[in-house]
Amino acid sequence: MGCPVIVHDMLKQPLWFSVLVAIGSLLVLKNLIYAANWVWITFLRPGKNLKKYGSWAVITGCTDGIGKAFAFQLARKGLNVVLVGRNPEKLEEVSGGLKSKYPKVEVRTAVVDFAGDLHEGIKRMEKEIDGLDVGILINNAGVSYPYARFYHEVDPQLLNNLIKVNVEGTSKVTQAVLPVMLKKKKGAIVNIGSGASIVIPSDPLYSVYAATKA
Figure 1 (cartoon, rainbow, N blue to C red):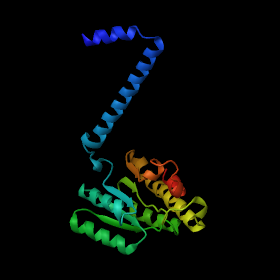
Figure 2: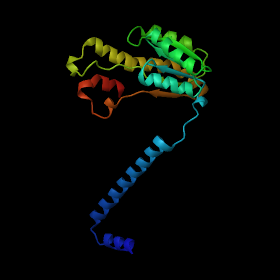
Figure 3: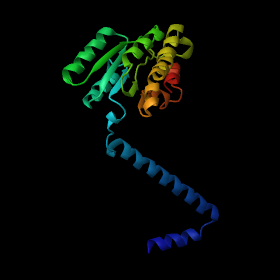
């Protein structure tokens, strides 16, 4: 009996009230669908077979943190990896760790200083990936401020590095890898962003970094 009573009461309300209730119900429904979709994607959706994109993955900024974790996770999935970073010793260290833990996985390295001679670095990377079935690119290389600064306190060198590494470097690496994916009409590119670009509008004390990550 509850539902007919509610409908009867609604019909007795002014039109504007019914319109507001309808709009509110649609917004609630939209948010419920969004929440259900997020739960599905985050917790319930089965993982993809990453090998269907290709047998090789390229990872930049792979000697520490997120990039290093990506390298080991992709190798665990059976993908061969091309490690791209600026420090040869660290690259060899990660490469050795991967080969030791996953003997069947092939590992290549390319020294690229994203804040230095990017042109030469990209040429070295292109030489390493030439002829490989690259299916995944993880653009993880990036720099931030050494500490919080107002915009007018950002020195020219830091400003240049932020833009060159986070924007130009990411763009140039993608430009180098993309033709392989286009040729075979499949591939996956992951650009590592930052909460600084979405959680806090403009992130005042890291404004240039937030802009480059947006």
